[in-house]
Image 1 (tube, helix red, strand yellow):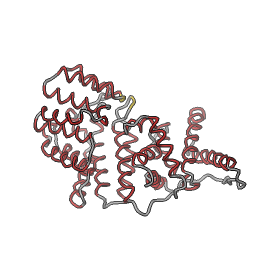
Image 2 (cartoon, one colour; image 1 turned 135 degrees about the vertical axis):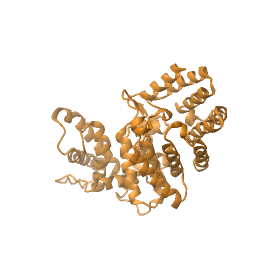
Image 3 (cartoon, helix red, strand yellow; image 1 turned 90 degrees about the vertical axis):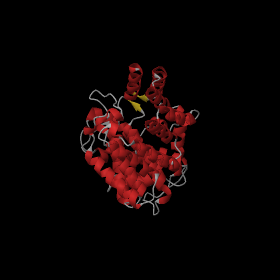
Image 4 (cartoon, one colour; image 1 turned 90 degrees about the horizontal axis):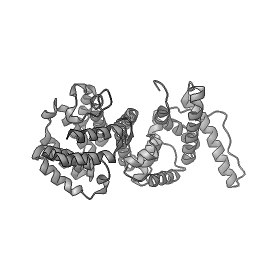
Length: 399
């Protein structure tokens, strides 16, 4: 780790490493996860008072290991077994923390779990998101999400801690998990910051690891390209005082050209050598945006064509929302609004801020300022990300 260690650093960087070390040594995924959480609570109490240890990861592994021994002994006692769990003299050290994180990623995407549970458990154990954040990212009530994570931990109990011999059956869920971790980092579900940069960086790091493991998989390359091309805009997305800057108003000279070049090379190679998939198509859309030196130069007909292809590969209301914007850019706002009407009763988007925000944008383009302002305010009430709230309210005031 570099820089000052904070609670968020601990949760993001150290949790999967500590959890991986314990599961590799002891098994008992569910008990290990509980022990790591208790070790983090101890750290939250002691570190502000006594200072951060020189080796915080080793400290957490020792504390979590001792707590795990207590948990396992209590379980043994409850089952009235005669053999006690032996306490090792030394806590395990993660020989390869990065590999452990990737192994943990595949473990959490166990094939006996539903896709929703795979995603939730991985976001919790590897991504470091709270249950509230996961519920928001997956548009699921928080109590339901808490129960889902608890059941998922019980399901993976006893699973050997190693990379699976066959990746195919888990890869789709792994990619979706990484995609959601990146999205949560790029635009947080809640809070005072638009971004949680450390989460976006972690998603990119894990996806690079996965690409190194599966260099010929087009969708892995596509996802990495999508992340790089999207994250390249980071510096231009907010003003110095934290206000959100929409894509068409960003200073594109601030975009990270090295990331754009890497992402463009990845997606160009993947689309020319592998079977086309949804992550590649999303990366291609991001690449078209990156090619435009100004918003006016954007090749919207090409973007609309790519969204048409993407919608054939991916049944998602968010894709339809974005296709409506592209349709409005090519055929006019009335055409985009007509496309939005098919989502009017789709609760996957209508209960989030995205649907009213997009409709407001298209109404603004159409010249209906009053209706647009009303919907911008409605969207502001539905998001819990403060910079997004301010941006949407400012749009309403401008109208």
